[in-house]
Length: 381
Image 1 (cartoon, rainbow, N blue to C red):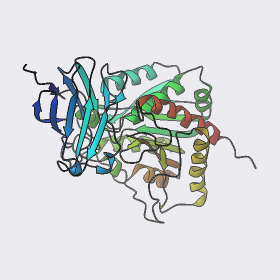
Image 2 (image 1 turned 180 degrees about the vertical axis):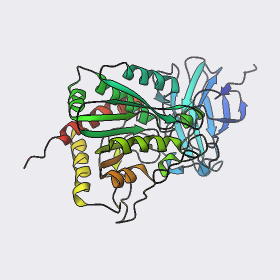
Image 3 (image 1 turned 180 degrees about the horizontal axis):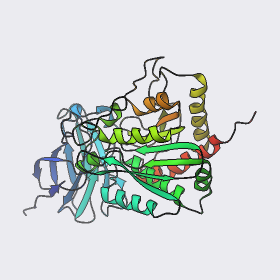
Image 4 (image 1 turned 90 degrees about the horizontal axis):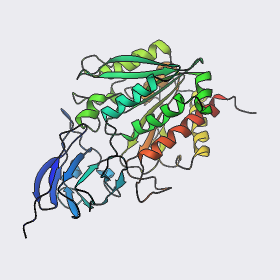
């Protein structure tokens, strides 16, 4: 009996894979680098001709990927309807093929989609922006244009004096960040949601759901259309290299910033955590305490957030001011922070079916906004 080979393709929004070889339901794959960059980690591809057959998909050369520590303990995301994203059994062998991830999955239907994390398409982004822009009290603002000619979208709302900025997907492969944004905008635009009502009363909110639409569409992990890491451009952004950052920072200069959250995902650390701005030249304990107080509130509100695991803090005066959180804290005296969610799972509260997921990202957004409501209240005592 002759068994036909499966077909694998990635010529679509955020697609990324190289097919080395296919033999029946087994395939040897590699991840393409971001354009003009050494970064490689994001993958997104479709397998067809697979119904009822166990797929064995091996991706090699991962020791040379952007974050090799992201592969141990990682299970690939998989969907057959592109609505629900579960996890496929995956195993990493660093001694084989210069680091090989083997994905095993038996689809019930003829097509299955695999991705590093549940994708958030440009089409869904456009729907998200359109729905929010139609909501009462929301102002749409076109901040600028990317190198590929796409728009940097911003949604603004609220009558308060506290200037709050939420922005996501500087690193486009961190798609959980825009799922978080979807959850946040649902809260902020729902007239029945008291958390959104309080924040719109007390704040002027500026929301940038996707800072890097070019990289998102191109299937990049970390860079824009020209291979530039936007979160290393905040000290001196330029129209030639990083127009996205230049547009956002110019808008921040106009409004000022009191509170800022830059939303990301982390490849290696299986936890949700915040990174602050320790080490900026103008650091004061008072400014730092505002950030730490927000962390304490969020940790109390949701078991999905913790403070034991995270990034090392910069030494005094050693903060990298090209990173947005450090630049915004230094430039505006703001309470700024980077929110990190896992590509793997939350090890404190694991979910064997989905790992960290779009649904949990959206729920975390509501907790972050509710924590901000509490943070805005004067501290008792």
